[in-house]
Length: 72
Image (tube, rainbow, N blue to C red):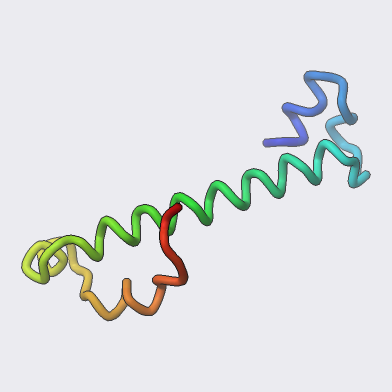
């Protein structure tokens, strides 16, 4: 998907296998935002009570294992 977007803007050809600066920057930014989002959602889910978590089919231990930091 990103390669198609790069091709549209002329940054890199759609079929290119190069690892340009812009491509790496976008990949790193996307990866960082995904991790940030996961931490935020994980923190919210930990704030729910056990009955609510059970309603959605989760248990608290699953989220506590995945908690690797706080949201800044």
